[in-house]
Image 1 (cartoon, protein in one colour):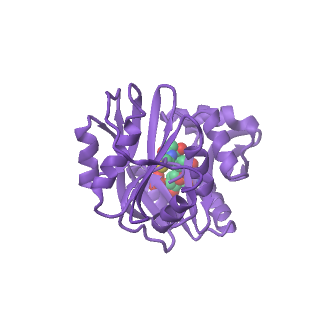
Image 2 (spheres, rainbow, N blue to C red):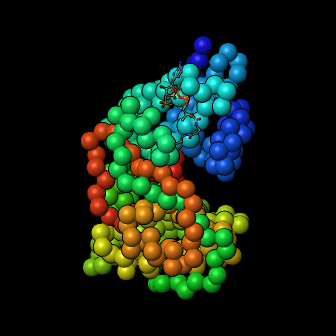
Length: 279
Ligand SMILES: CC(C)(COP(=O)(O)OP(=O)(O)OC[C@H]1O[C@@H](n2cnc3c(N)ncnc32)[C@H](O)[C@@H]1OP(=O)(O)O)[C@@H](O)C(=O)NCCC(=O)NCCS
């Protein structure tokens, strides 16, 4: 019989091993980070003493995100994936979340639609093997004095308060965060997590149609990512943004559908995901 319990530090190695059967490149630090952001929001599925599946959740007030759903191959098609999804949805609702988002592989859209998730738009994981020198573009660094304005701006478009996520990203010494403003109003911001040999660009939000702003913000973070492998999750439907990355030499990887359950509808803006498991 399957049972679900909270994912504990002793489960991190197991979680990494299981997640990476899907080439998700997860590390123990990733699960530690998720646990720091949402204590008790990650789950492990067990059958007897054997651990066979995982899922993670994060709540941002009325918006929550679901991710890292995976069940050991030999235990699939027995209702365990459904159990993990239901448990996670109950958890998020118990935290006051009204709308839940996720990124689904195309072949799982039908699976998620059974829980009430509705497809929104498709996103593609783009990557650049090694970035050459880039010019910086005069965006301002996010710092303590402007951070709360960035959080308010982000909330206006994302729908939830992502302070607990953005704070550790932006203020980690090796990472970067930039914004642009006009007449005292923020028109866009970007953050990037910079590792030794790779960089993950996102989140980014800019006002609709402000590709001039997006271009400057993207150049600013790419200038800090030279000689690294760079990843970004962008929507193919946003052709202007997408073409910007293709022109810079980014290549297409797999694509996923953003799905939502609940009444929130993502407003039209220029958007780069923070990650597939956290929105
Ligand atoms: C997605 C995933 C977690 C689903 O796990 P699962 O344990 O197979 O899920 P369930 O058993 O609840 O449901 C899967 C299917 O089995 C069917 N099923 C459920 N119980 C069943 C049973 N007792 N007997 C036969 N089939 C059953 C379900 O109806 C469902 O049918 P579908 O294939 O038409 O969708 C699993 O496929 C997986 O780990 N995939 C790889 C990782 C991944 O893609 N994660 C999602 C990222 S978006």
